[in-house]
Image (cartoon, rainbow, N blue to C red; front, side, top):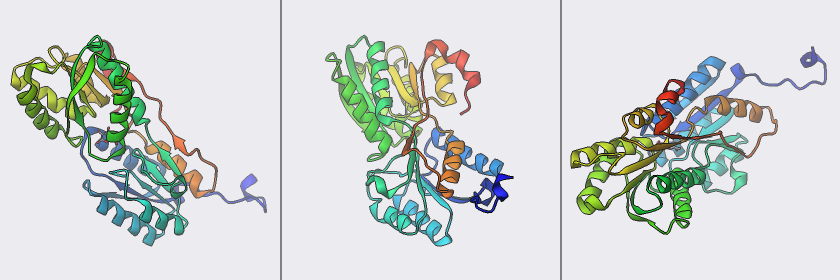
Length: 303
Ligand code: GYE
């Protein structure tokens, strides 16, 4: 066949690949689904995967990347917990001649320091969240924002897109923003504090992920208001629990952010290992989900 002709290049196959991935941690349902997608895809394809969990610490991610370099893996992947502070270690990866994939979150580095980013358009997600809240509130009202991990690409991008879109709605304004770190319990805590301070003047919540929205729902109920009715809530990710909350009438809308990136990650890794061309930014297609279709959509959800 073609592969055995004398001048043909022998391409690597999946079972020959050794890949290191420096994951952030397990802060949310999104992250758990993302890790599962990476692990199960590697198993299915017979790829040797070294998966490290940084427990939200950038220093741990940097150490993991250095150990992947020392092992001489074929491709390195990382989801940078925050946007800055990567130049040095990424330059070391480049120096070692190992392709680098930014999976999910982006980093604020010169484009030549990584091969590809595979992940969502966070700015667009923020715009969509603002559009949904504007619709739910008829362009009129006071909003509180539950932000994700400070300095992370989704926190910055979603915040920027939300702010940008808000300019077109003079009747909407942000009362306060608090960081809940993308964690459900922290979302509840911060929402409880916001209710103590701003009480009945809150008309809407923009939670930068579903987990924090689910925490906020609990806080709002404990405060004695009806989430989804007295206070409109829009979040991002579209995990199963968000659909359940929409069906219960407690969450109003969720903007999809797809964590099932395993197949794209390894297909891209294989191309890079074989010196084949890849796009610089690979974006998954994503939608917006509301209460009216939640029950019908739930059985189709894969995370
Ligand atoms: O929205 C959040 C997770 O980086 C897009 O991280 C991801 C975000 C996701 O913790 O739930």
